[in-house]
Image 1 (spheres, rainbow, N blue to C red):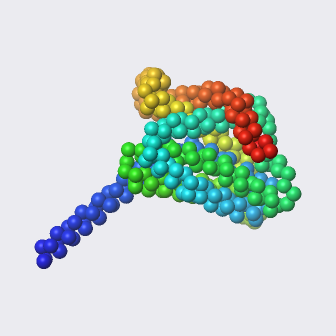
Image 2 (image 1 turned 180 degrees about the vertical axis):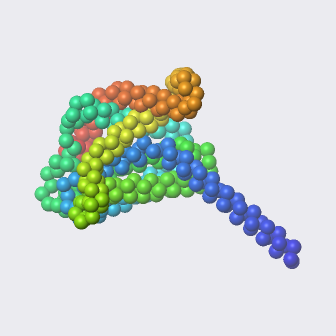
Image 3 (image 1 turned 120 degrees about the vertical axis):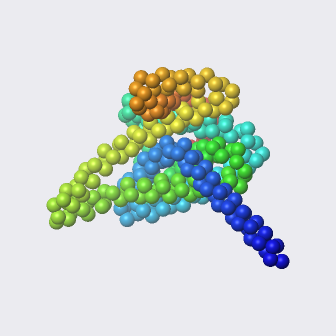
Length: 322
């Protein structure tokens, strides 16, 4: 009786250790997948603040909260189950879908590059120039638009995550997708909330009677436009780098090894020039080449989207509305 109880306790201890190890592995997998989605996260944080431009300051945080809730629904109720189903019944399709998302990132990055070269290249965003007549209607329109945009970015985050854990058991895939989805949502929209309220904090500090605090507040107010521009620039580069990298790795996975080998050899050659910072130069070269490829792919995809995909989509929608 005693020996049986001891054996049972040993089994429970072993199972506990196994569960703890599995959770640690899932956490490590989630961290690894999250790092690969960094470019999308940065761009999401850079883009989202525009949805509260022109609205009352006291509605900024409620709007961000609504968008964050919509983002969680996108990830956990739609994308996570869909990703698991695909992983189970058609795992071969994950790489092509990931590459399709990579091409989308390249297209978005290309648009941002063109807007730098030719300001207004794509015109003002329809969300900013909304025809809504009431503040409530405008707010709902902004939230709906932001949630739709988030769906595309979230789909890419979940696809990158799924590709990173595609060889793990299905339960771990689901756990990692949930952890990444929830973690990314809180990270992005937490940062967005800080960004959109930074001006208000700066104004409050600037009105302080204390010299240093007042100077700090004015610095925050004056520095936010520059910060947003830098963040947008980083997001643009990150999208091109991530998108190009996804395409290079996807081609390698499908059997076309030339592009990845060429990037690898170029990175090694540059790293040999300054061995003391060789690892950094290797990464920088790989990222730069992936971003360059991203611009090229974006330029090639752009006319296809503008002259074929979008017109076809508009014709298929009721009354031809976009």
